[in-house]
Image (tube, rainbow, N blue to C red; front, side):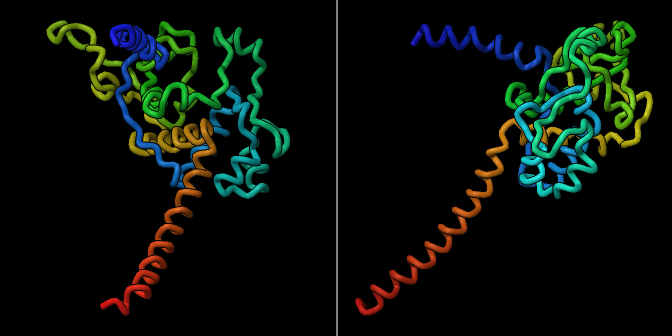
Length: 247
């Protein structure tokens, strides 16, 4: 028992580092039953993310079938990187050039939601802020010194990080909520509420991509519940038929 406890205590800090190292100020309630949200999330990913990031374990056709997107709409509006409907989703940016531009290759995002978690993704997307010391001009509260530029700034706008006065104890505490650390200094096309809703759609889509079989389980679960309800009704009627002459 004691060795197991020690192992758990050693693993906990490593888990925190793997999850991004910083605090996760926001939580996200994933809703894979909201097809419209998943469709909007797919649109956001294809428009803003697929140029750099791939989804090497996901095919355009599978997304269309699972999310109720007609093949023609998929081909004409969501296949930004070319290819065919049966292809996996590949980013168009050459890896060698990306490594030179950003210092690292943009990672494949097929399993990012399973690796980091929905709360981490949602917080990451909400907490970019201006930082002149970074090559891209921005930084992130959740992943400090991230190589990713603020590609969603046209929607969100730009945030600046507040610095507490010396009377307040200098820099903000690690666990302080992001809203107290960041302020919007340049508006984007969306209001803060609209941007949060959009990022919720994007995170829903990324959670779906990480485990598309969930959609099958959800569909099967609904059918099983309907079957059980019908079976219960039939069993009750059968019980009444067997027992009606007993009294």
